[in-house]
Image (tube, rainbow, N blue to C red; front, side):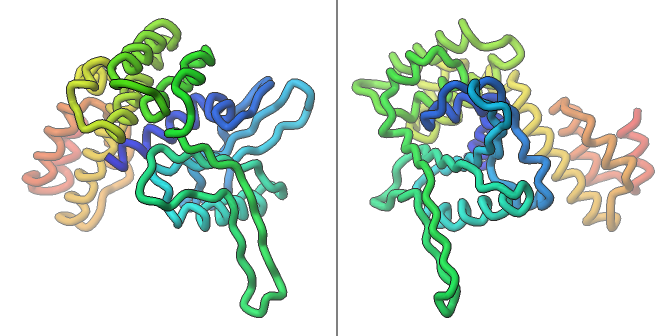
Length: 280
């Protein structure tokens, strides 16, 4: 579930980052793009780094977006670390937005971090914006006419049972999503709904299993998990995976074919036999 949420959140940042900024109160965005891949330390990338250009400015501003499933104490240090990474790479302090999806316990993110050196000569004080989705009215997102906000609606504040809200989410995605993104938006909406409700029947409103099967986002996620399993098994049995095999595996997204290759990775006599099956 955590992997699903993380991958879904990153997809939303990359494809609907402007919607997340609007969720944080940012308006008048003229253009935007995700630029996190440009950082020099890819293993320590934040959830999202967005470059947004406003109507009254020529130069873009940087926004660091962190999405946290719950109000985790570690997020405060993580935000500070990520801000320092951006400062080192871009020589500018980014605007920071943390979106917290669901409450847990009594702890709440404060949107501030204070740290000092051992002798106290140096002090860091940082404040940033925190949005708790459960305190955001669902109607405000539904009324925004922004399909990129819809997957977050199941986690927002509303009265009564969830079915009417989920039907409104489905209606807006069906009407306003680009065809190539429709299944992904429905799939992400299901993943967010699962964070709040343990009721598989609710997911049918958002397309259920069929949408999850057809979503390119989920297909990619499943493919990567199966490819990882194949690589791990071949490495365990034969000491490594040649670059040509690794490259060929990365190009496969068909789940049935990958499942067949998973089975073959356990039984093939050598790497040549696996390569022959892979290229056949």
